[in-house]
Structure formats: C-alpha cells, structure tokens
Amino acid sequence: MTPGSNIPLTAQRVAVDVTAPVRLDVSGLLLTADGKVRSDDDFIFYNQPSGPGVTYTSGGGASPDSVTVDTAAVPPEIDKIVVTASPDAAGQTFQGIEPTATIRSADDGSVLATFTPPRLGAETALVVMEVYRRGGAWKARAVGQGYADGLAGIATDFGVSVEEPAAPAAPAVPPRPA
Image 1: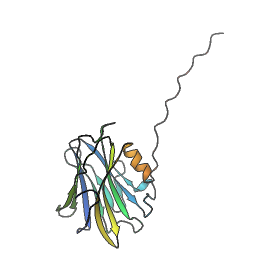
Image 2: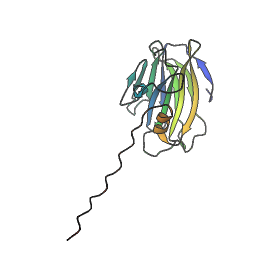
Image 3: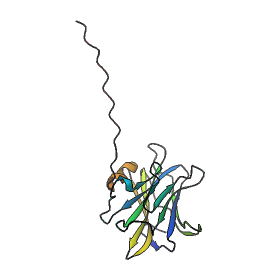
Image 4: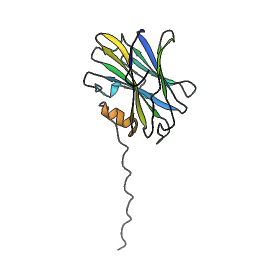
C-alpha cells in the first residue's frame, strides 16, 4: 500500500501487526465520527489491552505487537480504529527506522496488505493505519502520519487525557540561624 491508499477488508476479524528493527509501542484508538475517543477506555495498549471489538497483543520483542479488530463487535458509534506506533526507547525517533504494518485475517493469518511509511525522520510517534467503516463496509487505509511530540501528542489529538508527570518538589530550605 502507499500513503492514503485503502483496501476493502475481506475478513471480519483483522490484525494489524507492526514491526521495525527496534522495539515499538503499538496501540489502537477507537474514534467516533468527530475523530475523538468517547473516553480514555477507547485507548487500547499494553496497560489496557482490550476494548469493545479491539484487542492489543504484545509480541514480547520476539514477534510484532498487534492490534486486532473484530468488526462485528465494534460499537456502531465507532467509525474508525487508528493503529499507532512509537519507538520504545525514550527520545528515539523514526529516523532510519522503517516500520511495516501487515494487515492479515485474524482467523487464518492470510495477509491482506502491507504498508511501510516512506521518509520518516524526527517523528517520535506515528499513525500507521486506520481500520474504518464506510457505507456499512469495513476498509483499511495506509496513513503514515508522524508526530514529533510522541504518543502523548497522538493521544491528545484524539481526545485521550494524558497525565503529565508531577513536577519535582522544591528542596526544603533549612531554617536560618537566629
């Protein structure tokens, strides 16, 4: 696939596997027609591996992380599932790293399509693919849109609340001698 291209899905249950030469954090976001999650529960990742019709599976470093979509189980108010990836190492960019998404039937493993985003650089997170509903049918679109502000930037754009790390406490000032 090329950026922006789409395919009709011929399987009811599809898995999007994302691989790269480095360990990636892969996640899925369930989006309504306004392009936002309904709540933080629609952000599917390693700490919250399942949601309505969508499941995250860690490859454990030996195989790719995967987001599986059961299109029959996705709530009717969800229009698309966005699959994202970011390098696991803090501060690492996609410069020189070419992630590849493989869409396959989750039931028989047959490959439906593959996509490798071109020309990545300073991006620290990426919207790789979309699985979306159009006119009652499900399709997949190759996206490849990068973000320089990491997974938090993607999550915030799609309406997920991102907790900022607490500011360090100011050091105690010793009392002045009398």
